[in-house]
Image 1 (spheres, rainbow, N blue to C red):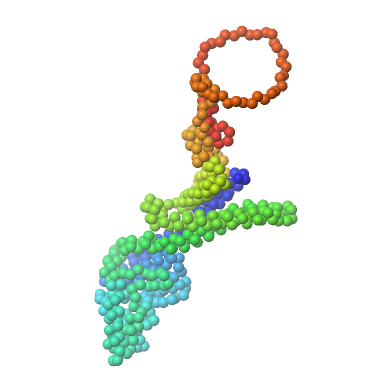
Image 2 (image 1 turned 180 degrees about the vertical axis):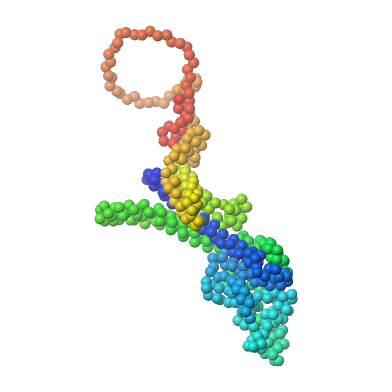
Length: 484
């Protein structure tokens, strides 16, 4: 494998983390939007301007807010621009609900919830005495789910009954029968059905400002469906791929421009290398980004357990980057394109760089808040940039890890070779026989020396000879026993 400088290794892997980090944040933002839509439903009922009405009256307004709110929650989860408003115009025969896509109104709805299905049907089929047409002509007629079938039957009977004697009344009921529904639907998005008795309970809760959407199965877990997670994952994957390519190619683009300035021409081989690198990093960035985003959403949904709710997106993104890089290197080892020692070295690099990135991102976030940025994205981007800068210089952390391997015997996936053999000199002193290994004799020239006749006499004292053996680095990334 071609050796890369510390700066190159740190920069390249930090770009990988940055893409995963942003993808995970996209997943968090998506979940936050769904949670905000649920909170909006609760606020619209608990703080409704008519919440002081008796519950049997207030439940009609709760019906409007519930249908609008649940549709908007599901639309947000689906990533749709469709939404439902409750205009509260209070003008004659005005619609209670407006289905819109962007600023365009698709359909209006009349919402009625009376004590019985028959009263509900009669209210929806009310005749305008001036136009002699249905008061809510062309509007959808939304009713509680337990009133729906009976209301249709009532409207049908009234249409048949008045067909000859009062054709205008018959037509109003026939049109009402066609328009009756228990939900608001647009393409694959729908509001939730609700029964009249449930509306009464909601109204009593709303009177006391204690309505909780979760008590009626309106939750993030219920709203975010598997196909929505896949859609968000693809979106985040594209974003992560673009960011990874942009960051990784930035130094290459700079070098290409520098070469052009110096030589007056473009280095074709360098441009080819940039293209190959861009395609590879883009594909890998897409995979990491989509996984980071989908994992974050699954964590917030509680699929992976309550302990993972509220997980830090940056930490999750870094973890995904480390795991994916390790999986990639494992495949390279299995195919003989990388040694286990090289994989161990790469693993240490990813862990150390990730640690630097996380520390820098945290410090950057603190700095972003300290200097007065109120926009969260500014502090986040500042933290990401500082995290990238921290992760570029990683040798200190790597040396600390090697020292840890020396002290504990940890091999770190083959990065450090642990040699547990004692030196030959120590084995001989312990009285252990060893098999000598034959060595080739190399002839050498003798250098003449002058003999000095005087000699010094000395006395040898009997002492205990202590030789310390300790573990240390022998060669490159090899830990063994040496005489201290």
